[in-house]
Length: 209
Image (cartoon, rainbow, N blue to C red):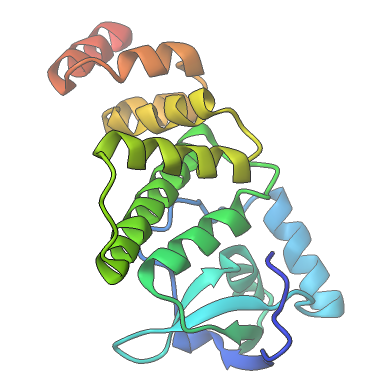
């Protein structure tokens, strides 16, 4: 969780006013860890505030704290402590990804989607900065390389590992499920991502035969 800025205040926000982050890649499941979080909240409350941002249609959008929000709801709470930040879409994506990548239990596809979302947000930020400053735009490949380096550094991973994870997003949803269920190992899954969707479908048919 990012450090709270000195000027920010923690407020009690009704759960009913908070909606999930759009295209959030991280699953919120009712597993043993969730039950532990619920038990903790029932005993001592929500200790770490969530981070939310104002939603254009009213209310708020969750940025960091989806699991706490769900646990608070199951624990019977009506409000949750939260910090309200005015974040644009790219800033919100980057904060959402960074706060969730700290979790110990992340599936391969959650990590893949998160890396891709952050990569696209970083590239978009770079493009906006160029438009604002009037600087010369680098080649597309250079932009991508720069963004991959940031994602890798922040995730304490290698550039090649980040790129291999992002390749998984090219898999059919049915194949992605088999990657997360460990029916297909990571390295073979990366190789499968280079096949067309029709070829992947044929592979699935053969696998299930």
